[in-house]
Length: 556
Image (tube, rainbow, N blue to C red; front, side, top):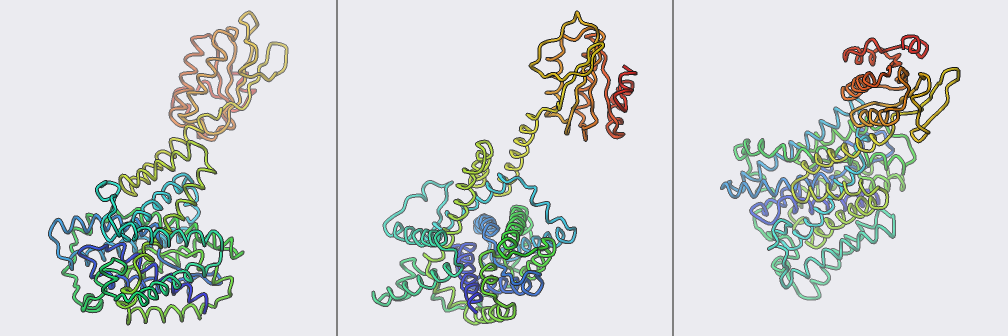
């Protein structure tokens, strides 16, 4: 029961915060209670699917905050463009619901496909700086969204005129920020999963106690922006829900804005895999990632029917349920109670959540992401990698998530190529003078003398020879042999340990062969691999290829 109560309080609080965040304080404010009900129902559906299908002892599914931050950014653009184009509130809300449901459906289908094809481990190959930069940018956005929710008006880095706070706005922001900081500090001090819901319940109780002692009414709290605007409307959520129809949907708007939200699908996948891994470590049991992805995929497909945002396994709630030995039946019963209660009392529940708690929750998640992924990255990564993290976060703030992800992947690839190209492809260099055996040498060994008899220089290569390392190999061999090897010497390159050549590497070997001929050197390539031989023969080097060292000496 305790685990179910904790999960229920957190789910209700997050649904209230995200409903308010996504729809904002503009023309869609009257629909916030409607979407709050839909989010709670979607969360409960996702949790029920996870409880029934997961092979873990017990697991709790919930809304994914980073993915929701992306959807929020998309919703802000969608609503602003719709208002400017003269769309009715009912058209905006119906179209936005379909857009969010489509993104959640895509998340579910992606989970299912990746799990079905047993490709869950592929996400682990995404560079850590890209993940850290993306989640750091998400943390910044959640902080900004929290400030905007607390103020009840737009607050954007792109518009400096919104930065100035007036009068009671300082009180609103400091109240929400203080609550978020309190949650963050409490989580750092205590690892108990009941800390967050307990703090939320205590804060709500203290808020209404202060209202009672001061003689303030609900209307006074709404006017002071301490309760959500529109909380005292006579029309309820069920009435507004019944007024919606398929005819209100603007399909062209949904299709036009859909690509901008695909980053949420990518992030939900990352969150799901990282949370499953953390639950695996904490629960001390083996987890089949692909199976859990398929279960979560079914939960997202079902949740899309209730127009919910992407859902993933919740690490803290799941760990708490495992620790207290919560049964799946008890948790399922609690979820059903929460769903029915929300459908019956959705208006009342959403209307009485203090704004500072909802905004503080967003700030807490944002601050936690920043400390974990930005501050943590500064201590774990090199300067170049940390620069990538910062650039991705700034790119997300300045543009959008998809551009930030693509920019980060490009930077990570360039950094990887640079670092790999610094690794020398030369494993060893050996020289054999006339009448002697092979002797190891290095780039700093004494220079050869052209007065000596012809000799054999054996260069043993390793790894993957590509455009980043091939030119370096060509330059180093020219530097080591130019004007030093006696005329008629044999330069023998051993490619036995080379797994693959790209076209740039083949061109570099061709250039080396051409240059060696100008210096009156002979070149022979030891290459036992058929696929590498085919590449070299296609470049016209077939007369200089040998399967082993004795053949190379004989041919040379």
